[in-house]
Length: 348
Image (cartoon, rainbow, N blue to C red; front, side):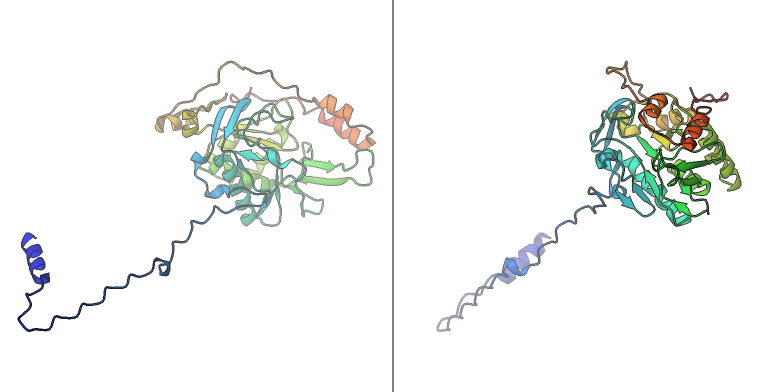
């Protein structure tokens, strides 16, 4: 290499001029190419936005958000808003838009499940309710939903003729039937509805099969849980998905007969950032975290006072005049309003 370099220098050295020879004319200096003629690199594209503003949750890395603390006394960093609408879903127009924030994992999984149902069984729109505030913390009307890991999901509904109905919070009886009482005092505007079992089960099944997160609990009234298990059997759903649904579904103190409340576990990454899980903690969740070099961290003693929530009786009193059919339904509802857990170990 040194020889080649020396030879190159020698070859480039000019010969001495001969006597009487005309000096060669100097070659013009090369004209530099103007910098302006070089195309500038295109700016990096901004993350795609979705209806309602904010980035597309499906494009975000999980590290964008961190769930801190417990569902009942926590916070949220980098909260991601659920799009106001998308293929086969919407955020409830009756809710304030700031109440739709959660972790990347939760929001993206909700969107994926809704879109999957839209592709498998088109024609209906799933309605999402409250998730959480942009920075977590207290959200009026809930004792939880504070750390970006809870979401309220309405059931898919059908009209009497079997056509899809608009998703809304309509209490459903043990047969899966209910009524949209638009004006509680007037019977003429009542709309009979029923749960759309194939679509509701399809949504739950996709969510439970999503490997980007682990569903901790689905709060749902006992009789709708039973109907969905029957639908899973009819649909010949995978046994492991059916068993997981059976394990994670419980009826809480409030019956949840008009929506499902879905809660997901802390990820290993969020545990490192201060995320806490409350009971129940399943054996499979402990094993998963162990394989990731993490472990469940339980919250300490509660530091804040539990919020006072409106009881069924108080809500009934505040509702004002009601026609006879509404009163009769509420009287029947009292029979399933209290939790019923026939020997299932993961339900309190």
